[in-house]
Structure formats: C-alpha cells, structure tokens
Length: 103
Image (tube, helix red, strand yellow):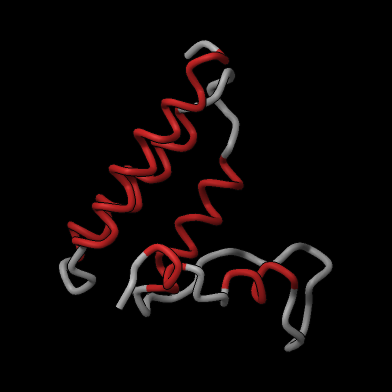
C-alpha cells in the first residue's frame, strides 16, 4: 500500500471488521477464530512494512476476546510480577466494545 491509501484501507477494514464482530457467534469457535485472524491480518497488512502493527493488532484481538467473555491473552511485561494489575491488564479490561456494538 502507498501511504496515501492507508486512510481508505483502514476505513474499509474497520467497516468489515465491525460488521463481522457484531455478527460473530462467540460459541462458534471457528467463526470466532476467523474473526480474530482477519482482524490481525487486516491491521498488520495496512502498513508500509510487513512486520509492523503487531502490538496494535494484538491489543484489538484481546479487546474483542474480552468483550465476548473469552479470556484475555495479552501477556504481562517482564516487570509486571505478582497479583497487582498491570497497565496492559487494566487497559484490556475496559469494555470499549460497547461503543461499537450497541445493546
């Protein structure tokens, strides 16, 4: 993609992703896995370099997983030991999906 195409590519990705998220049956493992895979590839693919946006894509996948009552899978940073919540855990626990998926 050319840098001038990023905004349009993100808009196309976002519309497709949100529609898939809203229609996803959380109890259908293959459908849920496909949603996560398409989301990761969609974000990671909209970049000038082939190995970028992985952290952003992983955060989005975690948000989707938590919003659908699935376990969080973001790992703690090396310095985050013990029972205390870390910044990643706190950020991933927000129910931001309610902004995209009205009841």
